[in-house]
Image (cartoon, rainbow, N blue to C red; front, side):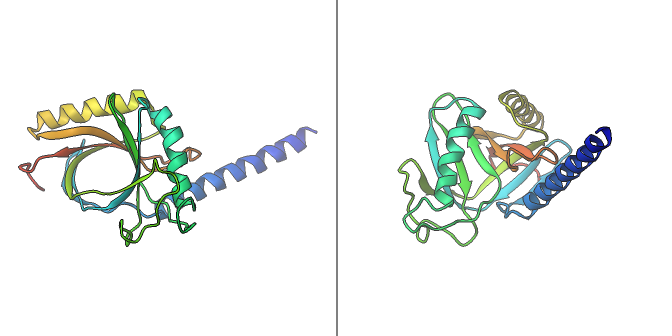
Length: 202
């Protein structure tokens, strides 16, 4: 009996390792929103993001967990066929979340080649298709599972770093998530905020 449980433990551990490795590899292969690094420092980056089209939901949620649970379900419904063409649209990373006390939002970036003109209309009226504009942002990265506490701490860290480097910023600090919730290792999270031109480039 003891030998059986040891063999079972080895099998379960092997399946776990294989599944987590597969998830990490799949995440790397998922299309990423394109950007160009303009300035790279030890603690932060300045990036240029070209305009894209996003599917977005607005929400009164004020926490990461609350917005993530309700928003992801609605947006995933749209790309998995909940639209006028019953069309499957590829998932991309990162997921954008703007969490604040007035009007929060969550967005999926639409794959390259899609815009408001050729995307199917959402069945759920809460899902809105919108175009972004080109923007420069400052970004800071952290690992592990995101939480409101971590988001707040890294937001404050990015704010301090920008002030120390005399880089002016505007708008809300936003959270970017790159991994599915069941991926345990190799997780990537970021905080970004729009910055004004005038910063020093590398």
